[in-house]
Image (cartoon, rainbow, N blue to C red; front, top):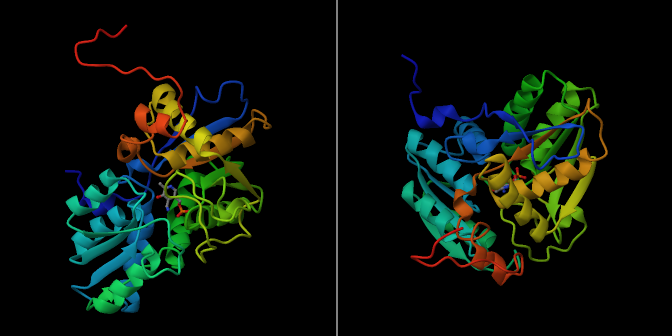
Length: 330
Ligand code: PMP
């Protein structure tokens, strides 16, 4: 019989899939690493597993303890999955821009969710960083993984994501592209690929226009899970060779194209990363292999990026057809 002891044991080993339609006119091979194939539906399962195991090893997380973390959803799902396997309770703190769908997923896994306003600075008492610190102080047996400063985040990518990309491309990968949120993915995976290739692999970060990584001030943008208004220590700025800024409009347009043209129903930060990957790939030749990491699924964004009314309310789509009940579609 072939089976896993627990769903949490199936983290990692995600596949590479070639992009064939959105790459029209591009000579290089562009491969997407599809992280929604992780059991919690995102790349964040990887850091959740490594951060919890390291905290158990160090004694920071004790049996029956509570995990408190500010998370935009995906890290929460990963932590909730691993916590279930190991008997911990979870409290997650989310900014209010995070879709209700995503918050409900966290609750479905049995976690408590606290929602905070997005439109306050990080040092404001109601910010989601400050709120989570307060909850840690007030909860007995609480441990905060702090994905923004925990070195086990980038380390999980150095230990798993990087080696998988290297193995699955037979060491032929020439470029690695990923969105930057905490910076863990790009720092850990990028560093591994640089080490394995003796510096040959070029690492490119994708960032929402307005975020600090591409020289912005933290001005608001709508794409979720990437970009910051501060510099987290999980991010090693010496790893990326280049940062490409991408607008919300281009990110969302590409996200919708990935579903329609490639069969990849993925999130907005995936569209953003692919825009950056194609910008890089456009100047490359047939021997180049670009790997772009797609962090999560589009299921959490059905009422936003994949909803014409929501898209139109921000001017991302102009004329859209309303279909009413009984109307015949042509
Ligand atoms: N996309 C999504 C949807 C995410 O949740 C995250 C994590 N914040 C990222 C991209 C960025 O990954 P990282 O934190 O490793 O930079």
